[in-house]
Image (cartoon, rainbow, N blue to C red; front, top):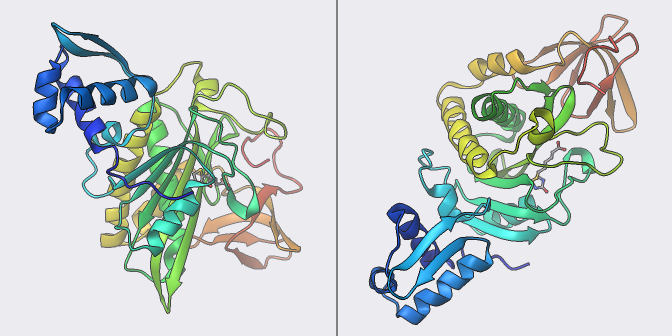
Amino acid sequence: MTLSSPNHDASLEVVLRTLKEAGAPVSGEALAARLGLTRAAVWKRINRLKAKGYEISGSPRRGYQLLACPDLLLPAEITQDLKARYLRGPIHHFPTVSSTNDLAKDLGRREAPEGTLVVAEAQSAGRGRLGRGWDSPPGVGLYVSLLLRPPLPPTELPQITLTAAVSVARVLRRAAGLTPGIKWPNDLLLNGKKVGGILTEMETELDRIRHLVVGLGLNVNNREFPPPLTDTATSLALATGRPFSRLKLLQAWLEEFEELYDRFLARGFPGILEEWKNYTVTLGREVRVRQGLGEVQGKALEVAPDGALLVQTRTGEIVRVTSGELAPGPGDNPEAPGLA
Ligand code: BTN
């Protein structure tokens, strides 16, 4: 897919913003003057907004009035009232893409600035960690990728990933009043089931990160999951019995992540790691970690300052695990949720 210019809908966004801010009918003439367009061109844009799901009344005497907005992640909606200072675009929004991470990486190669965001209503080939897929049905989840250009060596990638997990945990707490868990390194859990995940991917140059993409998948209003996710995945709506605004959650994520990312760049990882530990369900548990062809078994003792998981095996040896899939080990409490 070719990338659309983030500004290609700029006039549409101005129409929308004007109608929203007015909260009352706005004449076609006033809109035309504001946009420097003809009234016929305004009418075309009104129809395009209607086609996207906005309810707009129109009468020749009173003008156009916005009656209801769909829960769409349009750029103008995302930036409106967004408090994030620089993680706020340019925003590329698509009804469907293969994977927002792939598009964001492509933009990274083309020198797009830090804060560039790729947002999709659905993904046809959403990707998870370790080569898995990410279920991305239309309109119910958040499928977002953020481009970063941290002035850091590649070895700091795991710390940024853990920082992203903390930012999502904060969002679930702040925006939804929920108490999430984090399964190392960055699975977000509610009631022991997976509600969100993060896929960070980077391109490097000698010993520095050239660009980095943080891809967030969050199950928001999903009512069901296909097998084999039926018993292991959940959504905010399933966990609480009520729907959530994906827009508000996305705005909250950009704000929380920016605050943590600033802190990480200014003061490093230790404070953020402490916060990560407050959320984690992993430490102290008996775990098995599949790594390539091998497997490490033991007790998840600690997370090292660089984000690696330290596992103590039965022989007492402490093994550093930097990636892999965590599962309950023999002897793990079957009642304790979250590792399966
Ligand atoms: C995981 O395996 O837990 C990570 C899932 C990450 C999914 C998100 S959805 C937006 C972005 N685009 C992708 O293809 N993957 C990430």
